[in-house]
Image (cartoon, rainbow, N blue to C red; front, side):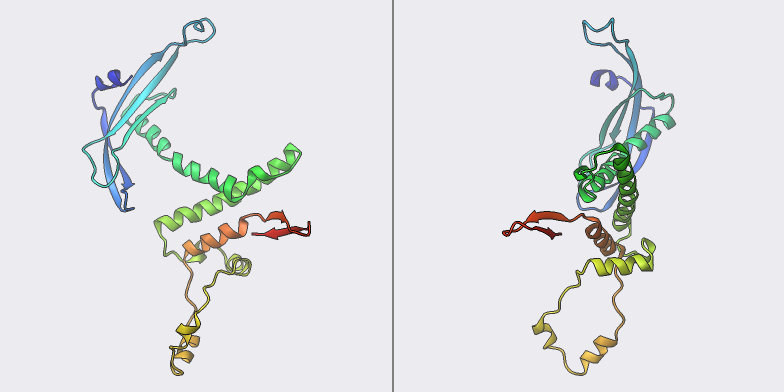
Length: 229
């Protein structure tokens, strides 16, 4: 397959935005090639299965980047690809794969969907439906944190939700005594009268992630069930 794709001419270019190893934005220019191939079933099963007509899409980055790996994507699809626009559409779908993985990670690891002890399909469906809404909300705040970390929490949560999260998760840093002792008597009133610092959407996301994590139960020395976060 690789030898056949080397013979295909470049059908067009496509620019995408990426990030290097330091997290800085960068731009990559991809050379797009695509070609239809016919895949035969294994020997001995050709009477049971028909041959498949597939399209191979090869997107290779021009040049060699400095602070990241070179992009080299090879996709195989049974969807029709007849133009550069069709090939770019399939590449954009493929580029969303990691976001899909993050969503499922929140659903499985954050909401603990696989640890539910429900015995009927209907109850499990209702629980997963609720978890999907919650996972999308956390996923949205995750993406918002990456693109605009200084965004105020009011963009993602209402005032009531922020108040509930503040009550559920108490992660306010405790002031050290030796630091307080350095403050003069004239400086203390000024600090008390200063407005509270606004939390960013990034911190609000961490609040939500902690709040939705289910409790874990373990038995103590006396045999009783105890709850810990």
